[in-house]
Image 1 (cartoon, one colour):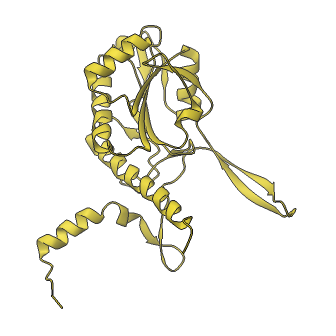
Image 2: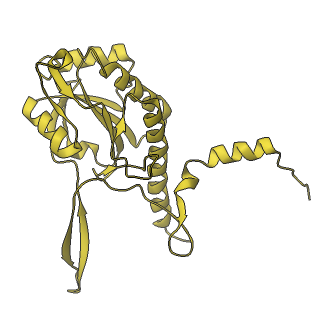
Length: 245
């Protein structure tokens, strides 16, 4: 039998390939279990009665609420269209003179990193919908180099977008005459799972991050790692549900 020797360089390479998933394996019940990314937002305990009349307590988590918006092609996009995909959302406007270019550069980074994953998407909501018509968004996306097969730019009713930002994604979006360009919006990127729930890893202090700064290379790097973990979570769940021979 051939013998193989692992050099220190090989060990370092293996360690790099195993991260970040390995840091999410911890001792919880006496064996190593995969730790899910925390679900962000309010939650409610409800009583559930099964078909046998047995009552149990279940937890209902915050989900992105229903919405109806228009994409860069003039097509209607709803919450249901995003279910079944892991996606990252942000809020921007095409005439933004400050943080938007950095944010969209980060979204491009995510696009290029996960280009081969059909269950991953990006969603950018305009906070200036009166100017950012579908035609404007389409031109903007083309100049940006966005792959519209998995990156959607949304516009629609102003109040609906602002309400969705605040109540759905927990980020700011509003008109503000004192802000550059006339609009105030968050620099944050938000990670959403296939069930429409906000997910997040931990920050450097061990606290739930909640959102990721789209102008920070470090935060976007952490987001990339957390997306990998979330993808692995779904793969693990799928594997557990596979029929056994």
